[in-house]
Image 1 (spheres, rainbow, N blue to C red):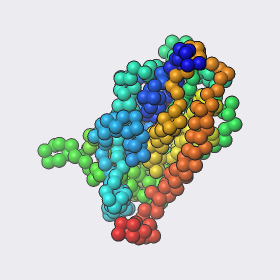
Image 2 (image 1 turned 90 degrees about the vertical axis):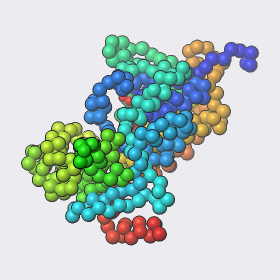
Image 3 (image 1 turned 30 degrees about the vertical axis):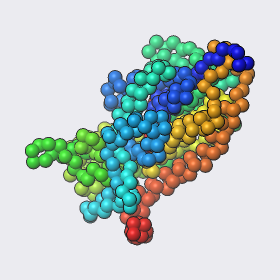
Image 4 (image 1 turned 180 degrees about the vertical axis):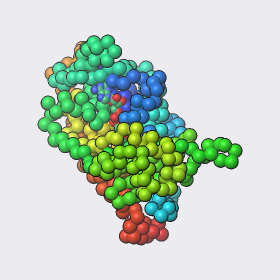
Length: 413
Ligand code: FAD
């Protein structure tokens, strides 16, 4: 065999969200040729509005996510951190207007508020700079045949579909993953999905102005602000332009009762009086009644892989409620864990067979590496999904209880 010519193996990645981009960069770094198919247009050249309507504007990146970015490129991680705002603790806003700062860590460690779109754009720039990665925007993955090793992709502008052959397929196409749907046909996958009773709405808190008219933060920028109100809550994360993005999480039954500008104003006056003065009544009412109400989903799957040829990463494998701020951090960590395993097990990025990947041959080393990943990653991911669910109660209620505050005080001694 050693005399035969080798060819570089081809990986296809569905989805150019942060996890898909990082997975592509990690595979390219290990020598694979990578093709990414992304159903949206290139984020770098489109208006931000459509994306922002779908997801939170900013998110918290923790050490878990930074460590994953560092594995692919330490400089990338440092660049993102330069744009991030460190949040060293929670700031609790009580109903009476009292502020209570609760540090996350007695040694000053922080989580970092970062613009979701800038993070994705930064990774897309890295992808564009790699000569091992080809990315096709406006290309939606609509089918997959894992036994014959191809995905079917539709160019959404021309409506022309074609098959793309692969040696290895990464499903990083988010919570409603097409790759996962097709994997379920060949894998005996345990899968569960749960919508919680609450929805979320994003509201903008504009920058304030100082005496010279310069923009200033209306709240302390180095905290994650929380207005816990037992069965619902408002949170706010800082942005670099000195605004905050606020997210209201509340049961559908509560939100359904607030239908008019008067009702919205009176409800916010009752529960979040200090937030209204920072947001401004007009902006608040307009945003509250106009911005989309989005559901919160939690999904679990097992296993994440099929033979030697497919894996689910990020939200495609595990969507969690956002209360632990770890959904993306875990997705990035998936990539780190998998690429460390590939390196440790010496998974080859080249093979002997022809240009079209051999259908019948199974690379036992790759298959056992993916099996190991599925088996060992699952417990951690289930644990973090459950922690995320539990943390909703902590954030909207327990942070104000005496028992919680005394335990926190002891932790910090
Ligand atoms: P996505 O970001 O969903 O990307 C999937 C990509 O696949 C998209 O670009 C999509 O267009 C593309 N795609 C989908 N289907 C197809 C297809 N068929 N063909 C081709 N392309 C396709 N996480 C944190 O770590 N910290 C936080 O503070 C945090 N806050 C959050 C706040 C809210 C309100 C929410 C809802 C989530 C939050 N998360 C947070 C979770 C985080 O947003 C997700 O975990 C993260 O976006 C997942 O990244 P991903 O790349 O796996 O998926």
